Length: 166
Image (spheres, rainbow, N blue to C red):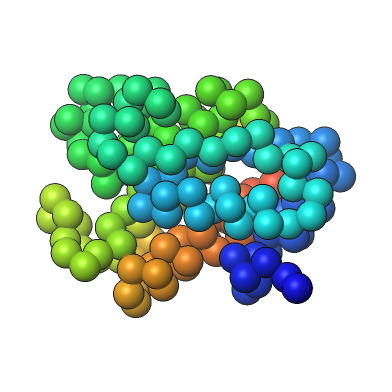
């Protein structure tokens, strides 16, 4: 039986590529609440590449666990590109990983701080820098969270492969 979280994602490819490169990943997740970490962990061999994950669902934990600057968090809010950027960097630094992924957004059912349901900020941090992508996802809470995870897995895999090609 395959892991239902892994199905429909590129997680197995991600684990294989990271393993071949001898690299690791860590996550800091808000709206996905550990779903990304669980998806990666669902792949056999994930223990070779997955350093850990921070679930920072509560706003204050984004600062205390992931190292998001409290002033920036207060000014920009928990759903912001700057927050995702800091989450990815914090995951990478605090877990001692080669790659960090940060996810924050609005799964619904209500808007948050003026952001519509489906707004997601995905950030990927590596040795060459940190990038942030804003996504506009649709569906119910589960679909938005699952789509955010799929985007994160694919985005990280693409970024890792770009660095090996460059």
